[in-house]
Image 1: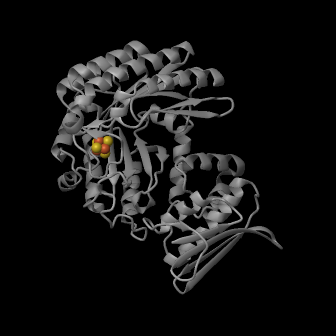
Image 2: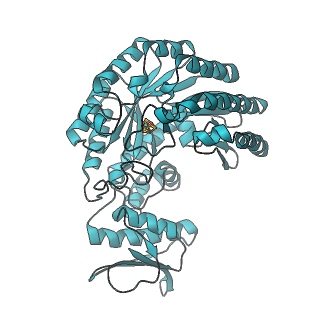
Image 3: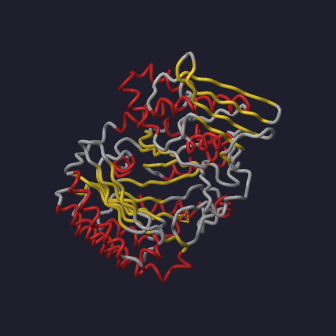
Length: 481
Ligand code: SF4
């Protein structure tokens, strides 16, 4: 598609809106010649004041929309530009993306702000009319914000630690993370862990120096379950020595085939409170197709073993929209996870990024096909009916059916780390390849990010850069505390 913009500079956002309706289509910014698919997006000053206008040509057909800009600040102009583009694309295609013109990753922030400014009824009207959202998403946002309010932290006194283990037994076909399959990188795990332990020691000392008590630790991946017993024990002993006994210590074992009774007993003995066993689906055919080396039976067995050891909470992730998954098989997966006894269930929507094997295999991004939205809506109804509460949400680019990711928990079982991190409630010192630390200032709301290099081999070979990041963490904390 060829796009011409004038009177504004929102190229990035216009591209995002175009990809919502025409996923995978190349977008070129240039003067619109005749023929083909073309969009013109303009901000103009007319007799009625400042207006956003969009014109979309699809072959011989032409669609137009206009919106008066009532708030001339950046946000107001951007909303009007997106609104007009939404209108012309919607009329041309009949597609109505569920989140309307909201393309950011955290709709809860916008919802909370609107709620404060306008109250519930006016917020609902505004989201439907001005942001073109689908009505069924609004109660979810509302419930999530209510649950979020129950989690308090003092960001001048509290922080969390994240630890990245970016290795997996094999690579899933949809994976776009930095994690590397262990068969190709087994030799990196030992040197990686040595550096990781140094980084944890250094960053925990920085938190201590600034009198920040560690409220949660999250060991995530990749697949942290890939570490052997001795490696797991060393890592958890160090975390205990550095952070003390924390109220919430999550260990993401990840793939069910890494779960053993000895490992679970070790986690329990080392103070882990929350365990993640992520099956993504329990359909054996789909599991095989996406390249995960475990079965439904292995998942059920792993959760049953974990339940026997009485951890505070067990989390399982599911993904809606995996290749070969039907509405029925996804609903059956959710029934399995509920029956197994998971306390947290995170429902993701399949996202296909360039770096995944699935990218380019086609057929996934048909925004007119809303069967993934039906999977999500059915799952939400089932979880709410089973007494689970939605408590955090984020959106990603390139999700099938433009869906979202929502964490559900039984009352009292939500993962605090997810909220601290997702809602920027306090500082997170993140260690390992691909980890991103955040320094949060409570007063000004300022957020500073310090991002580690992506790949494990860089982390191992260029560890000096991580030492610089630790010094940066010190500087940023000194600035904000
Ligand atoms: S388990 Fe997760 S991180 Fe590992 S390959 Fe699969 S999707 Fe990627």
